[in-house]
Amino acid sequence: MFQFIQYIALITMSISLIICFIRTLIGPSIPDRVLALDAFGINLIGFTGVIMILQDTIAYSDVILVLSILSFVSTVAVSKFIERGTIFERN
Image 1 (cartoon, rainbow, N blue to C red):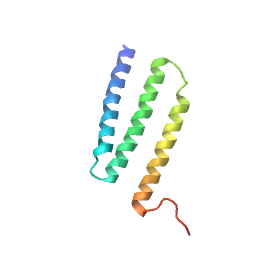
Image 2: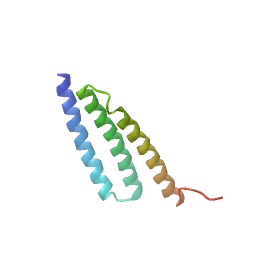
Image 3: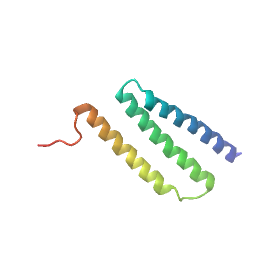
Image 4: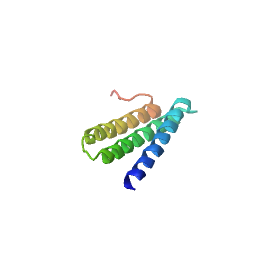
């Protein structure tokens, strides 16, 4: 029964990943695209976590860590670029 719930979660997350990818491609504005990419990263982390539970291994824990760090840093960098026009400020 638990395995069935995991497969349902994978299907739901797959649909969510597809929707976030479509929103990234056709988003009406740049902030919408940034938000869709952030949601895509979070869904990808959850998808990998469910696969890790399903396979009963911790082999993907490093992948989850790298995805979460990259998702956070890229969201902050793009948001700062949208707000100020530059990522690195020169004094």
